[in-house]
Length: 210
Image (cartoon, helix red, strand yellow):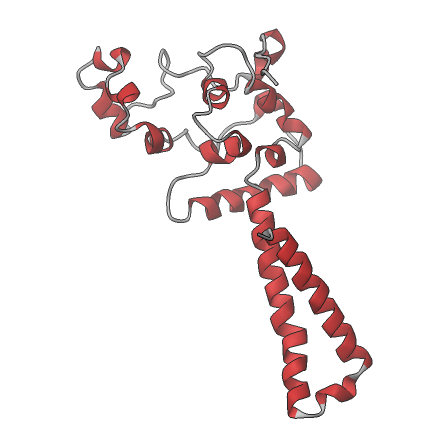
């Protein structure tokens, strides 16, 4: 099956060829059939090329390697390999609790109807900062808002490891507070070791078996 990127390239090539044909042979558009041909060449194929190309780029931007292609995110990528199960992103990445190829997108896009769209819209700001703004240091990067429990519960709610975890059951109301977002999963003493890029150079790293 052809990928969206390949289909987009085909549409782009066909659109360009048809536009050039119309430009160099304008007499083709004099007849009714020629006008239909011109409409297809100048509007339909360019729109199809734009749609497929845009969709391919949207899919590509979900990839972990895309997120880590910015130099400022390099330490966040390294943190996925910290050899300590207490570090939440590392534990999820190394144990394949999330798809490694979309690790960043999986945890940092809201699970709502327009979650992916809103995440991409925020991502445009990152592109702007990358080329025209003041790039922050890795340790200065902060989330736009507190990490939502709903992102964690999207996968963990109902699972035995969450519902029957001994640390969750010590307090009779803890699970209820987590599900209602009255208490953050990232609260101090819970899952509060995240990327911790400020101390990344002092960490030991997991060496993945080839």
